[in-house]
Structure formats: C-alpha cells, structure tokens
Length: 128
Image (cartoon, rainbow, N blue to C red):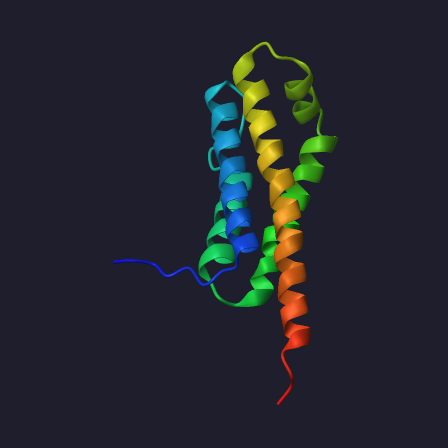
C-alpha cells in the first residue's frame, strides 16, 4: 500500500523538520532530560507533521507554522532549554536541544512558506 502525498514541497520540508525536532527531543530524553511519560511536545509535533504532509486540506498548513513557533518560543524562554544549549556536558541534552531547536526553526520557516504558498495560490484561482 502506498500513500500519495498531496502536499507541496514547503509542507513536506515542514513535516520533515517537525520530525527532526522529535528526534532531538528523543535524544534529550535518552540523555537524561526529564520529560513527562507522554511528552506533549512529541505528540503535538507528530500530529502536526502527519496532518501537514498527508491531509490535503490547505488550512492545516497553519499547524506547521504555529506548533513549531509555540514550542520554539517555549524552549527559548525556559531555563532548561537555555541551560542545555549553554552547557555541552553532558552532551546528550546539548545535542538533543540543538537538533530540536534546528528542527523547530526550519519548521517555522517552512511552515511560513507553506502558508504563503497556499494563500498566494488561493488568490490566483479565479472565483466561479
């Protein structure tokens, strides 16, 4: 069984970036950073990545912008995120946070590109 992707290139990049952020969070957990039993960030990122890349309803692209923006903002203002990035020992939390933030930052940019592309295409299509 194959899945046909109906999403645009920016939406696919966004989905991949969100999955990269999940990998960063898993590395943090493996490195000893305390997370809840079911990390809400991983659930939100996985849901957004799946919806943005697999569901053809274009307004869902907003999730690909808003979810990483929310998590990136929260990670920057939290003392844990700043501490993990400013101390390389232990290495797991540092590299995991760096990968997570990189994925979130690319997710914000790609999410914005996907939303802009969707809005521009809607304006180009003549009304019937």
